Length: 196
Image 1 (cartoon, helix red, strand yellow):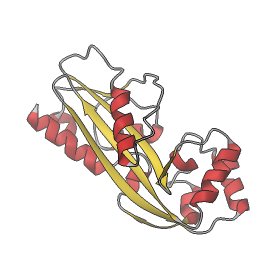
Image 2: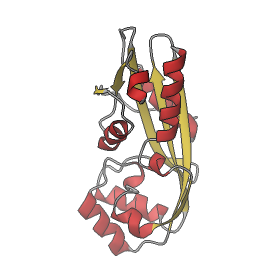
Image 3: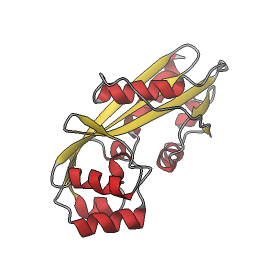
């Protein structure tokens, strides 16, 4: 349905995330994948949503010489807790530290998605609250060794074993925790298709 409305666009998803690829397939969107490396740094004056909005726009800035029908989609996800961003763990020990900090408490998962064409740029974001029960050291260690969540913000995937056994409740969009607020992406693409 949506692919028919968007057929005038060449949609480029600038993400290496297999979860985001899956979401776009499931939404019925025809798209190409193009990934350009960029250093994901942001001013330390930013916080929460400002960080993901900034980084999702930054990732679009490396796409120059756009054709008239190109639509670049970039996104960024962080875990936000105690007024600081928890990004992706670099190694086992960092993942352990992250999950221990999330254990027995609530954190927010923030995702921003930026849509860039030659005549416009729109950015949307979503925030989901997630509550973990107290995790044991054995559970944390088993999860990291088995699932190696080094490509995931906060060091965990809600759709994996740790989500099954550890998450008490969430408030907001489940898919946002996986890295894509699907209903917002769909709504924004419908708006873009009708406006441009």
